[in-house]
Image (tube, helix red, strand yellow):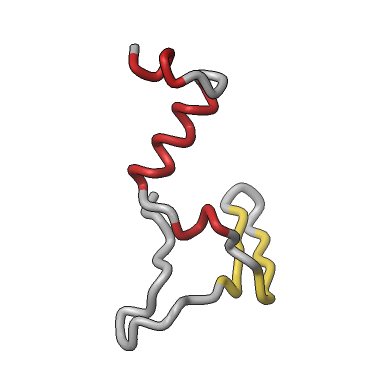
Length: 64
């Protein structure tokens, strides 16, 4: 699965989330949804956060 784009490929404006879909039951919900600050992070930054949380916030454990 690809990360959701955050910028319009035509004009570079910020994109807005307007539809979410469940592939398990085929339900779709439309509206305006906030992506939050995490939605704009790169894959590298998200990987760092996941690792940091798994290491219980201990940098020395991340170094290992």
